[in-house]
Image (cartoon, rainbow, N blue to C red):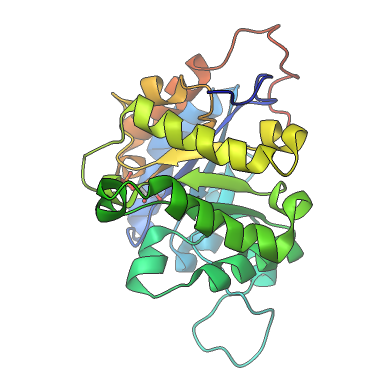
Length: 275
Ligand code: 13P
């Protein structure tokens, strides 16, 4: 199956999604345990998405470590009487570089629609954030043979809202719903097949931009399966839930992302380049 025909320009991206876990003291302990290992790592980009109330704490703890801060959600609105919402501008103001958009837990538990997700993607870009668009099918959709159709329609909603040039400024995370928090990871082959499909859909819009876009895999990524997943041609990193709450496991996943990089001289720009 033809996918990207050039190596991914830049290091892999590994994003921790802490979901609704953490305390002030526990976060400090986790970062303390992580930093010695992570700060010695060149060749991988790392971001951490803590719960909203801890963004300021994490901004302080991460400081100049090179580890980015991200948010787990973003309002589609810019400002106003929207109780409980957090705008892109506020997230940028707190030091965030990334915002997750359309995580399946937001879609299924909080009723976020494709249209809303598209607006959130646009709101993140407006605020200067890199949106991480999460796509994924349920087990019923997969069993019915509808995986590609579901992913395609989730992607289309954003493409129609913002266009390919804007979409290409973001990151896409494929997270099969059935693999999230279940311990049941998509096999490297299953994940690669969907990633290749996503890249083909993008390539139909703009082949060069499609080849450059980072496609992350998420769903029960652990220290012992990360290397095989990251070795797939169209997997450019991971979105990590449960395992990101364990310093050793998360560091091992980041190391796996480095060793999955093509050898130096394979057409990559210098490490730590951004796209
Ligand atoms: P797990 O790694 O816990 O399966 O969660 C994946 C996820 O939803 C990350 O956003």
